[in-house]
Amino acid sequence: MSLTRRQVTTAALAALPLAAVAVGTAEAHGRSRTVFIAGDSTAAQKYSDAAPETGWGMALPFFLCSGLSVANHAVNGRSSKSFVDEGRLDAILAAIRPGDFLLVQFAHNDEKTTDPTRYTEPWTTYQDHLRMYLSGARAKGARPVLATPVERRRFDAEGNAVPTHGEYPAAMRALAEEERVALLDLQALSLALWQELGVEATKTYFNWTDTEQDNTHFNPPGAIAVARLVARELLRTRVLGPRDVVRLHEVIPTSWITWPEPS
Image 1 (cartoon, helix red, strand yellow):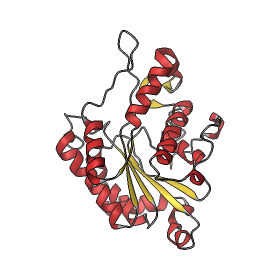
Image 2 (cartoon, one colour; image 1 turned 90 degrees about the vertical axis):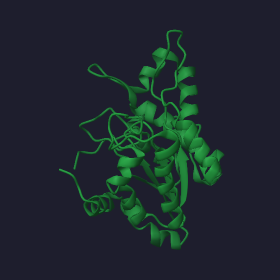
Image 3 (tube, rainbow, N blue to C red; image 1 turned 135 degrees about the horizontal axis):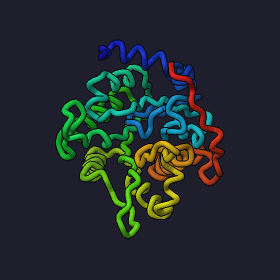
């Protein structure tokens, strides 16, 4: 069953944490800002039926100060196009407030050339759809931030980590420069991290279980590692200040990750 845009917006607003719903009032008093995440399954909230699979958006709050909350709208299987077509960007724009941030990470599903509901071409329709997120956030007085897609776990015969996203990261980098938008280069950073860890150690960061060998989605250690990259990049690009981020050099217990029951 497909949902109308109104239904998607209503459901998304109902799912927001109280802190995120009330951010307009809080911001007026200088108390709270919200980081909204638009993205795919690598960032999305996971539930108990998917554990131990973990989206990096689930771990990002561990690295942000108490004055920053996270509203994770990332959804499995979505591309920059399908996220818009389903009304999910509209849902974010209905809730976002001046002073908030819109963090956008897509490409994994934009690459699905056989699926016209999701496919975008890197240098044309991909950039066109990303511009919708940028203009929408700016119109609401929020700050858009682009994040290149985090890399999959793939190695060649010599043990070198191999990029998997084709021209999409380059297209996003070019758009960020053109639009003067902060860019978190998760593709380059995660590729370097996988190279540093190597073929075997990376298995402990991805959703490898007794029954599944998943080289795209993370388990708790992987989600925490990527969220740390996100927080460091938010600081490096001056999207956030030193007082906005915490625990960048601390060990985050994997027990902090929890999976709620499906609604």
